Length: 503
Image (spheres, rainbow, N blue to C red):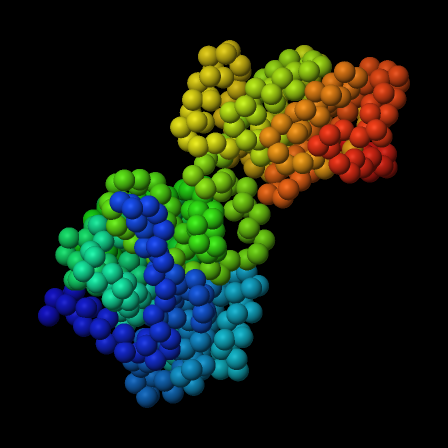
Protein backbone atom coordinates (compact mmCIF):
# COMPACT_ATOMS: atom_id res chain seq x y z
CA UNK A 1 0.00 0.00 0.00
CA UNK A 2 1.41 3.42 -0.97
CA UNK A 3 1.89 6.16 1.61
CA UNK A 4 -1.05 8.07 0.13
CA UNK A 5 -3.31 5.00 0.08
CA UNK A 6 -2.40 4.29 3.70
CA UNK A 7 -3.16 7.87 4.69
CA UNK A 8 -6.47 7.83 2.78
CA UNK A 9 -7.51 4.68 4.66
CA UNK A 10 -6.62 6.25 8.00
CA UNK A 11 -8.56 9.40 7.14
CA UNK A 12 -11.63 7.32 6.36
CA UNK A 13 -11.26 5.55 9.73
CA UNK A 14 -10.72 8.85 11.51
CA UNK A 15 -14.07 10.16 10.24
CA UNK A 16 -15.87 7.63 12.39
CA UNK A 17 -13.96 8.83 15.46
CA UNK A 18 -14.42 12.52 14.70
CA UNK A 19 -18.17 12.17 14.18
CA UNK A 20 -18.46 10.93 17.75
CA UNK A 21 -17.34 14.38 18.94
CA UNK A 22 -19.38 16.71 16.73
CA UNK A 23 -21.05 17.07 13.36
CA UNK A 24 -19.42 18.67 10.35
CA UNK A 25 -18.32 22.28 10.71
CA UNK A 26 -19.79 24.87 8.31
CA UNK A 27 -18.65 25.50 4.76
CA UNK A 28 -19.46 29.13 4.01
CA UNK A 29 -19.15 30.88 0.66
CA UNK A 30 -17.93 34.38 -0.17
CA UNK A 31 -16.90 36.05 -3.39
CA UNK A 32 -18.77 36.73 -6.60
CA UNK A 33 -20.01 34.52 -9.43
CA UNK A 34 -16.98 33.29 -11.31
CA UNK A 35 -14.72 33.71 -8.28
CA UNK A 36 -16.11 31.81 -5.30
CA UNK A 37 -14.25 31.08 -2.10
CA UNK A 38 -15.60 28.33 0.13
CA UNK A 39 -14.55 28.74 3.75
CA UNK A 40 -14.21 25.70 6.00
CA UNK A 41 -14.99 27.34 9.33
CA UNK A 42 -13.06 25.62 12.11
CA UNK A 43 -13.20 28.74 14.30
CA UNK A 44 -16.08 27.16 16.22
CA UNK A 45 -16.53 24.93 19.33
CA UNK A 46 -15.42 22.70 20.87
CA UNK A 47 -12.00 24.44 20.95
CA UNK A 48 -12.40 27.10 18.21
CA UNK A 49 -9.73 25.35 16.12
CA UNK A 50 -9.33 22.15 14.11
CA UNK A 51 -6.58 20.60 16.25
CA UNK A 52 -8.99 18.50 18.30
CA UNK A 53 -9.49 16.29 15.22
CA UNK A 54 -5.91 15.01 15.18
CA UNK A 55 -5.57 14.81 18.96
CA UNK A 56 -8.80 12.87 19.40
CA UNK A 57 -7.98 10.52 16.52
CA UNK A 58 -4.51 9.72 17.89
CA UNK A 59 -5.61 9.26 21.48
CA UNK A 60 -8.54 7.06 20.46
CA UNK A 61 -6.13 4.80 18.57
CA UNK A 62 -3.93 4.14 21.62
CA UNK A 63 -3.92 0.71 23.21
CA UNK A 64 -5.33 0.15 26.68
CA UNK A 65 -1.79 -0.09 28.02
CA UNK A 66 -0.83 3.24 26.39
CA UNK A 67 -3.99 4.93 27.68
CA UNK A 68 -3.16 3.78 31.17
CA UNK A 69 0.29 5.38 30.92
CA UNK A 70 -1.11 8.72 29.78
CA UNK A 71 0.14 11.16 27.17
CA UNK A 72 2.49 14.11 27.02
CA UNK A 73 2.38 16.95 24.50
CA UNK A 74 3.99 20.29 23.79
CA UNK A 75 2.02 23.16 22.34
CA UNK A 76 1.65 26.92 22.37
CA UNK A 77 -2.12 26.72 22.17
CA UNK A 78 -4.53 24.90 19.87
CA UNK A 79 -2.95 21.44 19.95
CA UNK A 80 -2.83 21.70 23.75
CA UNK A 81 -6.55 22.45 23.84
CA UNK A 82 -7.27 19.50 21.57
CA UNK A 83 -5.26 17.16 23.79
CA UNK A 84 -6.96 18.50 26.92
CA UNK A 85 -10.42 18.05 25.44
CA UNK A 86 -9.66 14.51 24.27
CA UNK A 87 -8.14 13.58 27.63
CA UNK A 88 -11.28 14.66 29.44
CA UNK A 89 -13.58 12.79 27.04
CA UNK A 90 -11.49 9.61 27.03
CA UNK A 91 -10.62 9.67 30.73
CA UNK A 92 -6.86 9.78 30.16
CA UNK A 93 -4.11 11.57 32.05
CA UNK A 94 -2.23 14.21 30.03
CA UNK A 95 0.79 16.37 30.74
CA UNK A 96 1.11 19.41 28.50
CA UNK A 97 4.21 21.61 28.24
CA UNK A 98 3.55 25.16 27.10
CA UNK A 99 6.09 27.97 26.61
CA UNK A 100 6.09 30.68 29.26
CA UNK A 101 5.11 33.10 26.48
CA UNK A 102 1.77 31.34 25.85
CA UNK A 103 -1.11 33.85 26.16
CA UNK A 104 -3.06 33.49 29.41
CA UNK A 105 -6.28 32.92 27.46
CA UNK A 106 -4.89 29.70 25.97
CA UNK A 107 -3.48 28.51 29.29
CA UNK A 108 -6.87 28.97 30.94
CA UNK A 109 -8.66 27.21 28.07
CA UNK A 110 -6.41 24.14 28.41
CA UNK A 111 -7.03 23.91 32.14
CA UNK A 112 -10.77 24.40 31.68
CA UNK A 113 -11.05 21.73 28.98
CA UNK A 114 -8.87 19.14 30.72
CA UNK A 115 -9.91 19.62 34.33
CA UNK A 116 -8.16 17.43 36.89
CA UNK A 117 -6.87 15.03 34.23
CA UNK A 118 -4.51 17.57 32.68
CA UNK A 119 -1.32 19.00 34.16
CA UNK A 120 -0.06 22.19 32.51
CA UNK A 121 3.67 22.88 32.79
CA UNK A 122 4.93 26.30 31.67
CA UNK A 123 8.54 25.99 30.57
CA UNK A 124 10.95 27.80 28.27
CA UNK A 125 10.50 30.72 25.94
CA UNK A 126 9.85 28.77 22.73
CA UNK A 127 7.91 25.79 21.43
CA UNK A 128 11.20 23.95 20.83
CA UNK A 129 12.11 24.18 24.52
CA UNK A 130 8.67 22.91 25.52
CA UNK A 131 8.93 20.10 22.95
CA UNK A 132 12.34 19.06 24.30
CA UNK A 133 10.86 18.83 27.80
CA UNK A 134 7.98 16.72 26.47
CA UNK A 135 10.44 14.34 24.80
CA UNK A 136 12.40 14.01 28.04
CA UNK A 137 9.15 13.25 29.85
CA UNK A 138 8.61 10.25 27.57
CA UNK A 139 11.89 8.80 28.76
CA UNK A 140 11.56 9.73 32.42
CA UNK A 141 7.87 9.04 33.08
CA UNK A 142 6.94 6.58 30.32
CA UNK A 143 4.19 8.80 28.88
CA UNK A 144 3.11 8.47 25.24
CA UNK A 145 4.30 11.37 23.07
CA UNK A 146 1.51 13.10 21.20
CA UNK A 147 3.14 15.12 18.42
CA UNK A 148 1.15 18.11 17.09
CA UNK A 149 1.68 17.19 13.43
CA UNK A 150 4.38 14.60 12.76
CA UNK A 151 2.22 11.49 13.23
CA UNK A 152 0.04 9.66 10.68
CA UNK A 153 -2.93 9.35 13.03
CA UNK A 154 -2.80 13.06 13.81
CA UNK A 155 -2.50 13.86 10.10
CA UNK A 156 -5.46 11.56 9.37
CA UNK A 157 -7.55 13.35 11.97
CA UNK A 158 -6.80 16.72 10.38
CA UNK A 159 -7.56 15.17 7.00
CA UNK A 160 -11.20 14.72 8.02
CA UNK A 161 -11.57 18.38 7.11
CA UNK A 162 -11.10 17.31 3.50
CA UNK A 163 -13.82 14.66 3.81
CA UNK A 164 -16.32 17.22 5.08
CA UNK A 165 -15.37 19.72 2.36
CA UNK A 166 -15.88 17.11 -0.38
CA UNK A 167 -19.19 15.99 1.16
CA UNK A 168 -20.57 19.50 0.73
CA UNK A 169 -19.04 20.35 -2.66
CA UNK A 170 -19.96 17.00 -4.16
CA UNK A 171 -19.37 17.05 -7.89
CA UNK A 172 -18.56 20.81 -7.95
CA UNK A 173 -14.81 20.31 -8.00
CA UNK A 174 -12.72 23.19 -6.67
CA UNK A 175 -10.00 24.64 -8.87
CA UNK A 176 -7.69 25.53 -5.98
CA UNK A 177 -7.43 24.83 -2.27
CA UNK A 178 -5.32 27.14 -0.11
CA UNK A 179 -3.91 25.31 2.92
CA UNK A 180 -1.80 27.01 5.58
CA UNK A 181 1.30 25.20 6.76
CA UNK A 182 2.94 25.17 10.17
CA UNK A 183 4.29 21.66 10.63
CA UNK A 184 2.31 20.43 7.63
CA UNK A 185 -0.19 18.02 9.23
CA UNK A 186 -3.36 19.74 8.07
CA UNK A 187 -1.99 20.48 4.59
CA UNK A 188 -0.89 16.85 4.15
CA UNK A 189 -4.17 15.34 5.37
CA UNK A 190 -6.57 17.67 3.58
CA UNK A 191 -4.45 17.78 0.43
CA UNK A 192 -4.32 13.99 0.30
CA UNK A 193 -8.08 13.53 0.56
CA UNK A 194 -9.04 16.31 -1.84
CA UNK A 195 -6.58 15.05 -4.45
CA UNK A 196 -8.20 11.62 -4.10
CA UNK A 197 -11.69 13.04 -4.71
CA UNK A 198 -10.67 15.78 -7.16
CA UNK A 199 -7.50 14.66 -8.98
CA UNK A 200 -7.27 17.93 -10.88
CA UNK A 201 -7.40 20.23 -7.87
CA UNK A 202 -4.43 22.56 -7.39
CA UNK A 203 -3.13 22.53 -3.81
CA UNK A 204 -1.40 25.71 -2.67
CA UNK A 205 0.64 25.55 0.53
CA UNK A 206 0.51 28.88 2.37
CA UNK A 207 3.24 29.92 4.81
CA UNK A 208 3.80 33.14 6.71
CA UNK A 209 6.70 35.46 6.12
CA UNK A 210 9.75 34.23 8.01
CA UNK A 211 7.91 30.95 8.69
CA UNK A 212 8.38 29.07 5.42
CA UNK A 213 9.94 25.91 6.89
CA UNK A 214 8.21 23.51 4.49
CA UNK A 215 9.29 25.44 1.41
CA UNK A 216 12.83 25.49 2.83
CA UNK A 217 12.67 21.72 3.32
CA UNK A 218 11.51 21.12 -0.25
CA UNK A 219 14.25 23.36 -1.61
CA UNK A 220 16.91 21.68 0.57
CA UNK A 221 15.65 18.15 -0.08
CA UNK A 222 15.10 17.49 3.64
CA UNK A 223 13.72 19.26 6.72
CA UNK A 224 15.98 22.07 7.78
CA UNK A 225 15.93 24.51 10.69
CA UNK A 226 15.04 28.16 10.16
CA UNK A 227 17.34 30.49 12.06
CA UNK A 228 14.46 32.89 12.80
CA UNK A 229 10.69 32.39 12.97
CA UNK A 230 8.22 35.26 13.05
CA UNK A 231 5.44 34.59 15.60
CA UNK A 232 2.74 37.00 14.45
CA UNK A 233 0.86 34.00 13.01
CA UNK A 234 1.69 31.96 16.08
CA UNK A 235 -0.40 28.94 15.08
CA UNK A 236 1.97 28.26 12.18
CA UNK A 237 5.22 29.41 13.80
CA UNK A 238 7.25 26.22 13.23
CA UNK A 239 11.01 26.35 12.66
CA UNK A 240 11.36 22.90 11.09
CA UNK A 241 9.06 20.85 8.87
CA UNK A 242 8.11 17.41 10.15
CA UNK A 243 9.94 14.29 9.05
CA UNK A 244 6.59 12.59 8.34
CA UNK A 245 4.81 15.60 6.85
CA UNK A 246 7.71 16.71 4.63
CA UNK A 247 7.53 13.96 1.95
CA UNK A 248 3.74 14.11 1.94
CA UNK A 249 3.65 17.89 1.44
CA UNK A 250 6.49 17.73 -1.07
CA UNK A 251 4.47 15.39 -3.31
CA UNK A 252 0.97 16.77 -2.66
CA UNK A 253 1.47 20.52 -2.82
CA UNK A 254 1.61 22.06 -6.27
CA UNK A 255 2.83 25.50 -5.23
CA UNK A 256 4.16 27.19 -2.10
CA UNK A 257 3.31 30.86 -1.46
CA UNK A 258 4.19 33.22 1.35
CA UNK A 259 1.85 35.84 2.80
CA UNK A 260 2.87 38.91 4.76
CA UNK A 261 1.51 39.89 8.15
CA UNK A 262 -0.23 42.89 6.56
CA UNK A 263 -1.93 40.60 4.04
CA UNK A 264 -3.11 38.37 6.87
CA UNK A 265 -4.53 41.38 8.71
CA UNK A 266 -6.37 42.44 5.56
CA UNK A 267 -7.80 38.92 5.24
CA UNK A 268 -9.05 39.01 8.83
CA UNK A 269 -10.77 42.32 8.06
CA UNK A 270 -12.26 40.84 4.87
CA UNK A 271 -13.71 37.91 6.82
CA UNK A 272 -15.23 40.25 9.38
CA UNK A 273 -16.74 42.50 6.71
CA UNK A 274 -18.09 39.62 4.65
CA UNK A 275 -19.21 37.08 7.26
CA UNK A 276 -18.69 38.60 10.73
CA UNK A 277 -16.20 35.80 11.34
CA UNK A 278 -13.15 36.41 13.53
CA UNK A 279 -10.07 34.24 13.13
CA UNK A 280 -6.64 34.23 14.64
CA UNK A 281 -3.86 35.31 12.24
CA UNK A 282 -2.92 31.75 11.21
CA UNK A 283 -6.58 31.04 10.56
CA UNK A 284 -6.77 33.68 7.84
CA UNK A 285 -3.59 32.78 5.94
CA UNK A 286 -5.39 30.76 3.26
CA UNK A 287 -7.79 33.65 2.63
CA UNK A 288 -4.84 36.05 2.41
CA UNK A 289 -3.28 33.86 -0.28
CA UNK A 290 -6.61 33.69 -2.15
CA UNK A 291 -6.91 37.49 -2.07
CA UNK A 292 -3.36 37.87 -3.37
CA UNK A 293 -3.94 35.31 -6.13
CA UNK A 294 -6.82 37.24 -7.71
CA UNK A 295 -8.20 35.42 -10.71
CA UNK A 296 -5.29 33.00 -10.39
CA UNK A 297 -7.28 31.14 -7.75
CA UNK A 298 -9.77 29.97 -10.34
CA UNK A 299 -13.55 30.11 -10.35
CA UNK A 300 -13.98 27.98 -7.24
CA UNK A 301 -11.50 27.92 -4.35
CA UNK A 302 -11.40 26.54 -0.83
CA UNK A 303 -9.64 27.86 2.29
CA UNK A 304 -9.66 26.59 5.87
CA UNK A 305 -10.30 29.02 8.73
CA UNK A 306 -8.33 26.86 11.10
CA UNK A 307 -8.71 28.71 14.39
CA UNK A 308 -9.96 31.71 16.37
CA UNK A 309 -7.91 31.53 19.56
CA UNK A 310 -6.40 34.97 19.75
CA UNK A 311 -5.61 37.21 22.68
CA UNK A 312 -7.99 40.20 22.71
CA UNK A 313 -5.09 42.66 22.87
CA UNK A 314 -3.96 41.56 19.41
CA UNK A 315 -6.98 43.22 17.81
CA UNK A 316 -5.24 46.59 18.13
CA UNK A 317 -2.36 45.44 15.94
CA UNK A 318 -4.70 43.75 13.48
CA UNK A 319 -6.84 46.83 13.08
CA UNK A 320 -3.87 49.13 12.50
CA UNK A 321 -2.44 46.93 9.75
CA UNK A 322 -5.61 45.66 8.13
CA UNK A 323 -7.14 48.64 6.38
CA UNK A 324 -10.65 48.45 5.01
CA UNK A 325 -11.81 45.57 2.83
CA UNK A 326 -10.31 45.80 -0.64
CA UNK A 327 -8.07 48.69 0.39
CA UNK A 328 -4.44 49.13 1.27
CA UNK A 329 -3.01 51.07 4.22
CA UNK A 330 0.33 52.81 3.82
CA UNK A 331 2.28 55.40 5.78
CA UNK A 332 4.05 58.35 4.13
CA UNK A 333 6.38 60.98 5.55
CA UNK A 334 6.08 64.31 3.75
CA UNK A 335 8.52 67.20 3.62
CA UNK A 336 6.72 70.57 3.54
CA UNK A 337 7.59 74.12 4.61
CA UNK A 338 7.23 74.86 8.32
CA UNK A 339 4.77 77.70 7.70
CA UNK A 340 1.22 78.67 8.59
CA UNK A 341 -1.27 76.85 6.38
CA UNK A 342 1.18 74.26 5.06
CA UNK A 343 -0.35 71.39 7.00
CA UNK A 344 -3.84 72.44 5.99
CA UNK A 345 -2.76 72.55 2.36
CA UNK A 346 -1.36 69.04 2.61
CA UNK A 347 -4.54 67.73 4.23
CA UNK A 348 -6.68 69.35 1.56
CA UNK A 349 -4.62 67.75 -1.19
CA UNK A 350 -4.61 64.30 0.37
CA UNK A 351 -8.24 64.07 1.49
CA UNK A 352 -9.55 64.52 -2.06
CA UNK A 353 -8.19 61.12 -3.14
CA UNK A 354 -7.60 58.94 -0.07
CA UNK A 355 -8.74 58.50 3.52
CA UNK A 356 -6.47 59.67 6.32
CA UNK A 357 -6.41 57.17 9.19
CA UNK A 358 -3.40 58.48 11.12
CA UNK A 359 -1.69 61.84 11.42
CA UNK A 360 1.60 62.20 13.31
CA UNK A 361 3.40 65.53 13.49
CA UNK A 362 5.58 67.49 15.88
CA UNK A 363 7.35 70.78 15.24
CA UNK A 364 11.04 69.93 15.24
CA UNK A 365 12.62 72.43 12.81
CA UNK A 366 12.17 76.12 11.96
CA UNK A 367 12.24 75.65 8.20
CA UNK A 368 10.71 72.28 7.28
CA UNK A 369 8.05 69.94 8.67
CA UNK A 370 7.87 66.17 8.33
CA UNK A 371 4.29 65.03 9.05
CA UNK A 372 3.47 61.33 8.73
CA UNK A 373 0.11 60.39 7.27
CA UNK A 374 -1.42 56.94 7.39
CA UNK A 375 -3.71 56.68 4.39
CA UNK A 376 -6.05 54.11 2.90
CA UNK A 377 -7.24 53.59 -0.65
CA UNK A 378 -7.66 50.86 -3.22
CA UNK A 379 -4.27 49.71 -4.43
CA UNK A 380 -4.71 51.18 -7.91
CA UNK A 381 -5.83 54.52 -6.52
CA UNK A 382 -2.90 54.57 -4.13
CA UNK A 383 -0.47 53.98 -6.98
CA UNK A 384 -1.98 56.82 -9.02
CA UNK A 385 -1.99 59.06 -5.96
CA UNK A 386 1.75 58.56 -5.44
CA UNK A 387 2.41 59.34 -9.10
CA UNK A 388 0.39 62.55 -8.81
CA UNK A 389 2.32 63.63 -5.73
CA UNK A 390 5.63 63.01 -7.46
CA UNK A 391 4.41 64.85 -10.55
CA UNK A 392 3.41 67.83 -8.44
CA UNK A 393 6.90 67.98 -6.96
CA UNK A 394 5.78 67.08 -3.44
CA UNK A 395 8.51 65.40 -1.44
CA UNK A 396 7.47 62.22 0.37
CA UNK A 397 8.69 58.74 1.23
CA UNK A 398 6.95 55.49 2.10
CA UNK A 399 7.72 54.74 5.76
CA UNK A 400 5.31 51.83 6.26
CA UNK A 401 6.75 49.44 8.82
CA UNK A 402 9.54 51.74 10.00
CA UNK A 403 10.10 51.51 13.74
CA UNK A 404 9.23 55.12 14.61
CA UNK A 405 5.96 54.89 12.69
CA UNK A 406 5.05 51.45 14.00
CA UNK A 407 5.49 52.67 17.59
CA UNK A 408 3.98 56.11 16.84
CA UNK A 409 7.03 58.11 17.87
CA UNK A 410 6.55 61.82 17.15
CA UNK A 411 9.71 63.97 17.23
CA UNK A 412 9.36 67.57 18.41
CA UNK A 413 11.39 70.44 19.88
CA UNK A 414 9.57 72.37 22.61
CA UNK A 415 12.01 75.28 22.26
CA UNK A 416 10.34 76.03 18.92
CA UNK A 417 6.80 76.16 20.38
CA UNK A 418 5.37 79.69 20.61
CA UNK A 419 2.70 80.20 23.32
CA UNK A 420 1.63 76.55 23.03
CA UNK A 421 -1.88 75.42 23.96
CA UNK A 422 -2.84 71.74 23.96
CA UNK A 423 -6.32 70.28 23.63
CA UNK A 424 -8.02 66.94 23.21
CA UNK A 425 -10.54 67.19 20.40
CA UNK A 426 -13.41 65.08 19.14
CA UNK A 427 -14.50 65.66 15.55
CA UNK A 428 -17.09 64.05 13.34
CA UNK A 429 -15.41 61.22 11.43
CA UNK A 430 -16.40 62.40 7.97
CA UNK A 431 -14.36 63.51 5.00
CA UNK A 432 -13.07 67.05 5.44
CA UNK A 433 -14.14 67.71 9.05
CA UNK A 434 -10.63 68.00 10.41
CA UNK A 435 -9.28 69.89 7.40
CA UNK A 436 -12.19 72.38 7.60
CA UNK A 437 -11.40 72.94 11.26
CA UNK A 438 -7.75 73.58 10.52
CA UNK A 439 -8.66 76.03 7.78
CA UNK A 440 -10.86 77.98 10.15
CA UNK A 441 -8.30 78.25 12.93
CA UNK A 442 -5.33 78.87 10.61
CA UNK A 443 -6.14 82.62 10.66
CA UNK A 444 -4.75 82.94 14.14
CA UNK A 445 -3.17 79.60 15.17
CA UNK A 446 -0.48 77.30 13.91
CA UNK A 447 -0.03 73.60 14.66
CA UNK A 448 2.99 72.48 16.68
CA UNK A 449 1.79 68.96 17.55
CA UNK A 450 -0.74 66.55 16.07
CA UNK A 451 -1.51 62.96 17.09
CA UNK A 452 -4.54 61.22 15.59
CA UNK A 453 -5.43 57.62 14.78
CA UNK A 454 -8.78 56.44 13.47
CA UNK A 455 -10.64 54.14 15.85
CA UNK A 456 -13.50 53.21 13.52
CA UNK A 457 -16.03 55.20 15.56
CA UNK A 458 -18.39 57.95 14.41
CA UNK A 459 -16.04 60.48 15.95
CA UNK A 460 -12.29 60.83 15.75
CA UNK A 461 -10.08 61.85 18.65
CA UNK A 462 -6.85 63.79 18.47
CA UNK A 463 -4.31 65.45 20.73
CA UNK A 464 -3.51 68.83 19.17
CA UNK A 465 -0.91 71.42 20.07
CA UNK A 466 -1.55 74.97 18.83
CA UNK A 467 0.86 77.90 18.86
CA UNK A 468 0.26 81.62 18.43
CA UNK A 469 2.03 84.72 17.21
CA UNK A 470 0.83 86.74 20.22
CA UNK A 471 -1.67 86.77 23.07
CA UNK A 472 -4.27 88.46 20.87
CA UNK A 473 -4.26 85.55 18.42
CA UNK A 474 -4.51 83.13 21.32
CA UNK A 475 -7.55 85.01 22.68
CA UNK A 476 -9.26 84.86 19.26
CA UNK A 477 -8.66 81.14 19.10
CA UNK A 478 -10.11 80.56 22.56
CA UNK A 479 -13.18 82.62 21.67
CA UNK A 480 -13.68 80.64 18.46
CA UNK A 481 -13.51 77.41 20.42
CA UNK A 482 -16.02 78.76 22.94
CA UNK A 483 -18.42 79.78 20.15
CA UNK A 484 -18.19 76.33 18.59
CA UNK A 485 -16.83 75.06 15.28
CA UNK A 486 -18.99 72.94 12.93
CA UNK A 487 -17.92 69.29 13.00
CA UNK A 488 -15.83 69.78 16.14
CA UNK A 489 -17.05 68.73 19.58
CA UNK A 490 -15.81 68.25 23.09
CA UNK A 491 -12.70 70.43 22.97
CA UNK A 492 -10.95 69.68 26.26
CA UNK A 493 -7.87 71.70 27.31
CA UNK A 494 -4.95 69.58 28.50
CA UNK A 495 -3.84 70.78 31.96
CA UNK A 496 -0.46 72.48 32.01
CA UNK A 497 0.77 69.94 34.54
CA UNK A 498 0.07 67.13 32.07
CA UNK A 499 1.67 69.06 29.21
CA UNK A 500 4.78 69.58 31.33
CA UNK A 501 5.11 65.82 31.88
CA UNK A 502 4.63 64.95 28.21
CA UNK A 503 6.60 67.75 26.58
